[in-house]
Length: 166
Image (cartoon, rainbow, N blue to C red; front, side):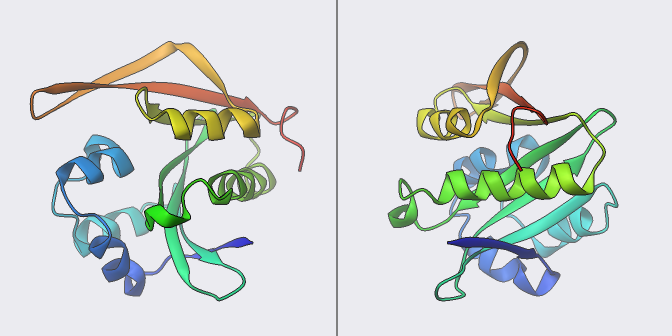
């Protein structure tokens, strides 16, 4: 259904064209990027030895349908900057499959007991998807960002290597 392939700077234009506004960028990437997303920002990620960038490809037709990253941290690896860009592809199981592929990659390549991710508390569809894969909310970790006149609360979710079946 989906496969992860290495993301290269040549793939940047397609990703950038799918980030329509500042709100979409914040939802996708958190507060570390600034709008508009640029090749330079992505190049910074590509040159970070603790980051692995992927394009998400539909295995049937070989179309790139999204983007994802893994950030290697001291005690965990963080799944992030995950986007299935065509809203018509959402709710079709791609998210769950992408999460499984990211976890498979992370647990296989990194000697870590835990994987984690951050998601905005209003993004119920994503939270439910992550729970289906085995993630649980860590009530100890929350962050807040301001966009326009709103506060967005980011919650942290974790999964242990033993919970995830490779």
